Image (tube, rainbow, N blue to C red; front, side, top):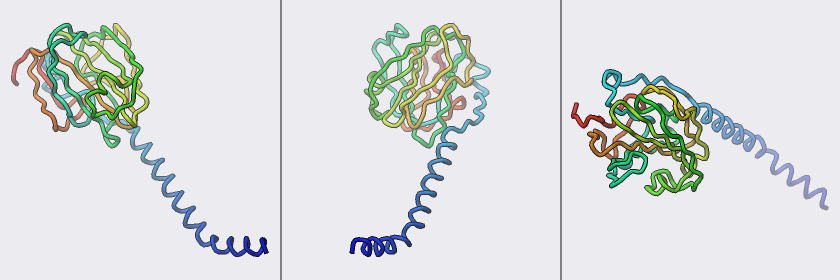
Length: 211
């Protein structure tokens, strides 16, 4: 009786097996190609204006500006500042580039939470890597921040490195956030809601001049 029931069940499910197999192949293939696409790299030529003017700070990542916040006192810069936060969705290019030329003065890793990257608290509570960069026109800082999906940040930067604006330095994986902090004396061009492209979009002028 049991054998007959199993035989009937196997016959009933037999036509479904190829369909399930096809679905699994499609899902697996889609995930594979999405991963390959996600880890893509693309050329991002430095904005010609930024190449000619070292006071200009460019976007270190592709994404959307979610916050432009004044800060009464930023401990890394030692002065009032403005924080520009860029949210990277899973579909954005996640290779990161230096926002300006200069010398890396500090590199600090902070363990932390995995709040949604667009949450303002993520700047202080999430796992992140923070960099302080001394330029010809003053200090700026920037940080790679993990998000709910992004659980790994990688970088190739050490204290004392002399870097060029637009050069690659790391990557954030599967959705994340990048903060750039400039002195309050800088003129900030960008506004919340704007889309930015790494190396191409100018965020601020450290001289405080409007180009």
